[in-house]
Image (cartoon, rainbow, N blue to C red):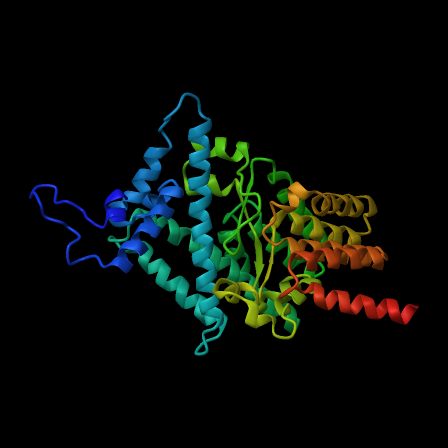
Length: 393
């Protein structure tokens, strides 16, 4: 770093020779200095993504046994952050792939998914594929099969056709992407088909697994409070495999537009959140996902429980879910741990509407808009409610 700042790097053998001479212009020097400074500030985690000779994977494995200071706290914190960052990068890659498949004008989504799955399966069998890539491929195959199952189910629900028999194999191959998201999508599909008891059973299972050691992860946004839970970090020290780590991760739940009939209808508005010229105010990353519905796993679990128990007329369980959802939106600390807090406020507002409290719902939508004034479906909900209130008055 000091050599970069000085603009001169002495040869390690030949005296008086500058290794930068003729190779590093002033603009490149400043750019490299900024990049390396960023790596240093990020504790050099970039090293764990080196794919050559599986170096990153090997460093990651070694780091779990390192205890630079007495006690396990530092080791646990490093291990937890590395695990979270790795899966976060997986989700970023998945988002990019899904965006590409959805925008493929030459083939429908199912055909594109099949092609992508076939390519990944071939790469998994290739002897030259690194272990790091094999781990990612394994994760990506589960995720894409989950999307394929949901897209297929959505088409069947829309057309009133029965689900194909092989759909259950697809769901079965994808339920362990993480502890919650794929199971919640399955529960949501059952809810949308009117199979409320099946939905309730899956939701109960997810609720049981979502304990304090489960860490939320998203590939779209960062959270205000980026602190990892102590229980999660301690878990990662002793559980290193992808399968073990996935049991303590909860990804945000995503519905593509092609999956919308597997999502509660209220969530469809999240897929059409732009009002006026909102699209012009999206940065590159947001353009990749803002035409989909994205919501944090825990709040979506509670929202889906509220809807399901409402349909089953189990009022005490319905109210329990509503109260727990309210606890989230009423807590500053919990709100700062949400990746899609505007959507969570919208879901809570919808529950308030279903309870007949339109003013409380309107307050929730206003809170949502105070966080994200643009590209927010709350604009539609607020306008609709204000019209209802005006007509009533």
